Length: 402
Image 1 (tube, rainbow, N blue to C red):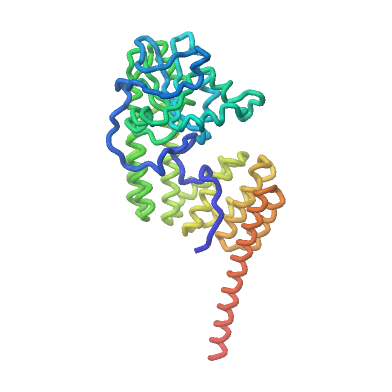
Image 2 (spheres, rainbow, N blue to C red; image 1 turned 45 degrees about the horizontal axis):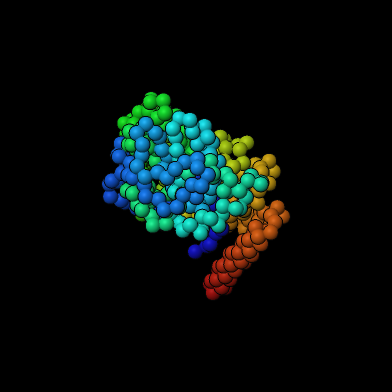
């Protein structure tokens, strides 16, 4: 099997629902799970946290039971989790903005105390002269090595990725569960008393059904059962057709993209399919990142055996046109896309030329990796030439025998 370089997962067409966008998974994946014992509307479990990092500052006391009339955010994080680190300034902003509204943010890591203390004196990325300790002193940073809080919240709610936040309302019930970067609106509405808990609970249930259905779609598609996978997508689209919020619109767009991708993978080159993808290609023009994402998705289909007709050449032309105007950091990867797509089409001379351009625009370790990829392409080209020569020799031998 031909081996190709893999670009970042975020660029692939198949990673459509963004389950891992801004989230670090606690487990190897999302498998079928039992019904959660903690959900929106449940009584928030008491906390039994071992270490409070900034307790000596006296801004907030330890939290065990939740006081009536106060609002809490129970958030889970880890030092190794990039999205958790990125969320910290936002937590600071929320805490400072709503301190007078009786809001307390409690951020919990289940790592050992030494690990967490190890980052506290380091500068926070992008904030020179501001340490992690100084930044996080605005809210309640904690460490709970026995994992009891993680069990009571994360595992009880079937939450697989961090950061994850649980919004505890004035009556001690869970009002909202989600990514802390999406906390602003629900927190403000809980403070104002306008939050619709039941509507959000139904939205969460719909999201759960969506995730379960997409697991089924991925399984069917992986088995090559495209027709049944498309039927499942159509069923989901029907459920979301009247959902007018931002999530509903995003789901419809992404599922439609996924559906047409499956049709292409199944060999469907009908006018409807080609018109859809040409429309996507047109929409991506002027946006190098979008063009790279589109191109990678198409390349993935080609590498899996899909015949995409003239769409491959049209995409190569459009992709090449976007490279010079792209951010210098992604230009090498765009050249790699050109190289890999040409290699997928067995156009090795063009692939090698594009890979050389990727090397010219790379530095350090990235350049070393690009050079290794060039060697692989050259080996593939040599192997292809040898195969052709062998075929020619057999044909000549056959003609001589006649």
